[in-house]
Length: 171
Image (cartoon, rainbow, N blue to C red; front, side, top):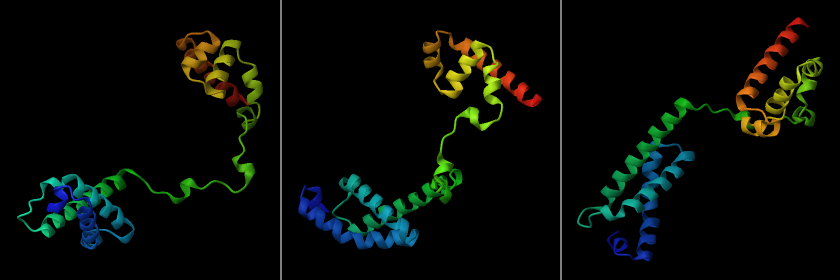
């Protein structure tokens, strides 16, 4: 390590290869095999970042073991915090095998009578609804396209949705 601190690249590479079994052993005590290698990589990065703090008059193994143990514990803490707020769901990335299931349908096809109800809306409400909800434009984009203010678009969409709900409840 002293040679690595002095800039000996070959010595540093040899040192890193030689300390790998020790680091893997320490990481293996704290983590399962599937996570241990990630922890070892984190330990190696930490050693590289703090190599200037090593004192050549002291044993290298103690310095390495302390860093490795602390990084392994930090990884456990990080994983614990992550698991508290995140939920792992294997099925979340699964798509349907049936091509018809992934087909996009227009909003008007999804509910019977919705197309007629939208057509019955006043022009300003229908335009605001189509721009913001059906074409999914942002308020700024819809304002530019329609020439209406953002607040007018918000009011028209609100009134359109309220009117559609009332009309669908009647049916």
